[in-house]
Image (cartoon, rainbow over all chains, first blue to last red; front, side):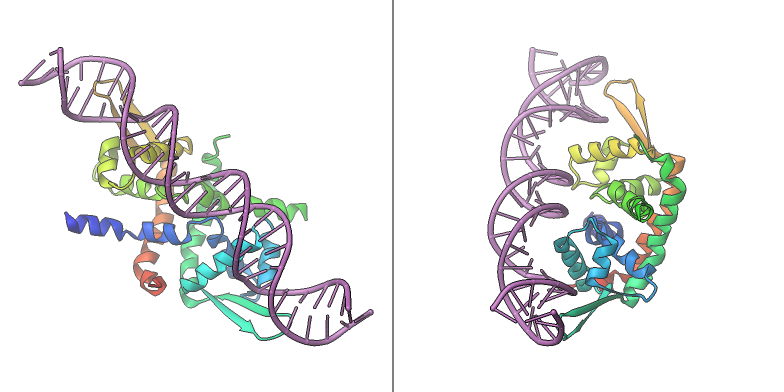
Length: 114
Length: 114
DNA sequence: CACAATTCCTACTTTTTGGTAACTATGCCA
DNA sequence: TGGCATAGTTACCAAAAAGTAGGAATTGTG
């Protein structure tokens, strides 16, 4: 019984959703994934996601960095330059995200309720 | 430019996350998917997810039903019996969710921050 | 000297989400 | 008569998430 519970609370979906199921994480990962250079600066990401506030973008990036999905490289220049890219772990997540995207493209029309 | 924006806001990740990225949806879908009979009653799901309140489970199921991912069958008995199962659209989403699960099993250890 | 550029951070407020507990309806069973 | 069971709903409250607006830091440029 304790086993079942432990297993349940260790459920990978829970973990994934609780960590990356927020409003912006997957979007940021996808932006990094689809960028030509695989590297984006803070303001470049922000321009790609205009409706994400600076605060939320900063928070999201910090979370992704702490989760080791995104690498953050700071260049000690003025004005500051900070570059973000996917780590190997981050890259390994992309097929799963792309599976969601593919599903969305194919099936979302069946889902829309109006 | 308007095209880019429209495309951005129509982004499948956004749609998927905004609809199923909540705390319980994917978990409910997975419970239905992995049940022996492919059919579960309200309280059976609730017993599988003890930390989801009745209110949230009810709300989640309603959302999934309105999104046509879950079928709800009511039997006019006393006490009431209501059975939930995945629709074809719901089943079509499972491979993508399983991809997330597989990723979680393989890579979550690299993510944990402590 | 004022200002621009970049990447944040902080305080404050609003919105959304989730939890608790009580209530409903109905018929069966003791 | 008085619980019990099922599948919810509702009102109320707390917590979390997110938006807004402003500031800090630095240094080159006009």
